[in-house]
Length: 291
Image (tube, rainbow, N blue to C red):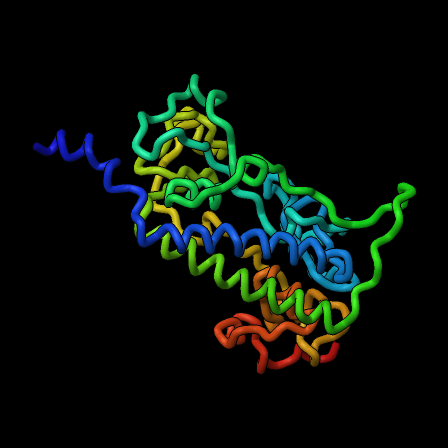
């Protein structure tokens, strides 16, 4: 009876009540991607050349928080370069399954299944109708206009920027809320030692774990239940308040606040930040002492 129930469990999915939620997540993700791409043409974003640090502002901060490629160094100044879309919206890929309850993917089958965004794979398994051009589309890395003979885009008015920022922020909140609801119903896994995500009842067997200190695992992932931050990373950045200095310095590291990159990007064009982020941003916190 138990084996029969396991074999017939696929008939219970997708759950019809969750299909509108999955479709709303797909729409919200497209709005966020389009909005961030538009704001990157106006708001300067800097990323470190040697670590994943990102700063949103006219100039990069001067705090010595760089740890290098392999975290072998400590307390080094950052080397800033122009940022791109993937610095704000961190891409998270997962295997695209033919069926939700199919057999586990073996190591020698890892090239037989395409890699798609994990959020879209979750929505696909939840019953959302996703066109192939959206599912297999590779996100554009850079949205900055370079001197390659192309005409620069038309300037965006402040009111239009504020509208785009508020629409993007609301879609970001809707995206994370929808993914949270889907994860309560549809199983997803994340590796404890790396950022690999698998959408399905059990993780795959591909030996791709890239944490060198766990070489005894022979590249096998150690799976645990995934959360919304594993599929939709927030990418926390430093937040400059009105009473902070124009360039954040290393001496005030304990006083400055933080904010998710999308929230900080939208806030700088006039969007209203939800109150739940005020504590993280230290809105009413003290300014660093004057040196």
